[in-house]
Length: 433
Image (tube, rainbow, N blue to C red):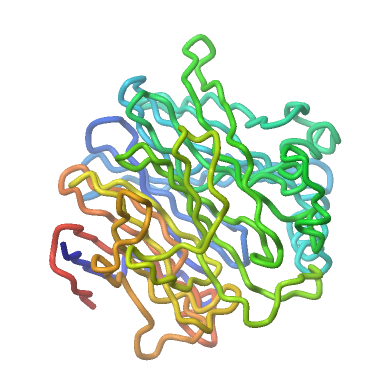
């Protein structure tokens, strides 16, 4: 099996200090109506403007942009809140879309909160994961707080309630997978202190460096409850990783059910050293994507281990986003992410971006590996081929991947064009400029 990739610039950055990000989704369970989201970004981990437009003909023509920034952004005194919904999966049996979302509350506003987080290791913002159901063809949503421990629900206007802020802290993972029996599974990054309490461990033995701002992993399983229009949730035994192996704990997990029934989870680790976070990781510790799996329906998972190819070769990967997906064309499982060299450190390098098939055990099939894109002549050393979204075209089965090329220009790192890649998992490998 060989994979074909075609690439082109989809939308140029509007100016030298702004990145152009795009994502698309289908509105209905069937049909050709798409919504495209446009985000303009001038600072890390924050969108400065958001717009949406609609296509009735599968993306060939588009309507006018509508400003939707206020939909997920709120202010309460000096605090800010941002709510977002993740990548949707259509549940054909129930006729709705499911996704995992999150709410992030910034104490004192996002600029000050991020500065305290990065410079002092303070929990200056808190995340809570959301279980989201959207009706077919509608913007109507039912949203539940994901509660893996006792705690209060969110009350508008009472953002600093300790019973809410200090319990059930976590952020959604990167996808929701619909199982053959109608249940769903999705991962969340859950507060590492809470994970340790559930496991009967002392977090100061496992992760003493910066436990207030780092996470473990919980896989959530849901069964639809029609009476209340959302899912009844159960939770796996938490997975935790020592700060001697990953100095940032668990980040950006993705999970999927394999044809065998095994549930595979993959997440981003880090080998970064930071005096601000009092990290304990040793210099020279290798950088990996980590994986674990469950053979009992998602109740118990193996201990996280460095992910590797099917021939047992361990590969290296920077602390970057990745994705697992099931091909609409052939039903096989694929992973998209960065595979880098042995000297990888922290978040870099973020190229090349690759795709590979996942076998029945949950390992990457080395012979299937294909490069989606890599650093080209003239690109900056800090190039990021890691900020992407995707959907699968209902007419062709192609994977459409949209990526903002941060760091492409040395002097203007935020001037990021959005590129589009059309990936044919049954084609012939090439990259077209």
